[in-house]
Length: 130
Image 1: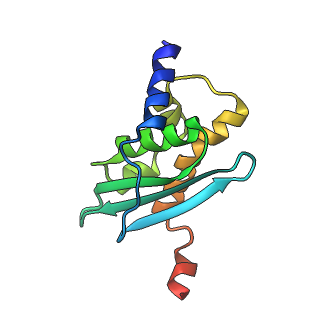
Image 2: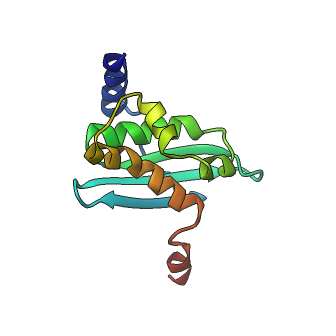
């Protein structure tokens, strides 16, 4: 079973379906993992009811961080912002389907950290000052 999930990770890394940037966007945030250099940006568009209508990610990094971002984006389109706020570590691990060590876990969870910061409005205060 691990081989199947490894193939899925490699496929999402090599051929991401949700890579790019949305401009304009309703939510956007980016961050990096300074230990390994992975960098992820996630942009969201939502409708008036708070449902995610479009989402894309950009950045660079290892296969785990990039595949995790692509799988996460795929899983949230059509969901409500409140659903995204309730995502957790286990949701990401379920999407990836393999056991990860501590170092790779940080890579896998970076997209979750970025999307949560985005929907909770981290950084909006400074953006409004520009």
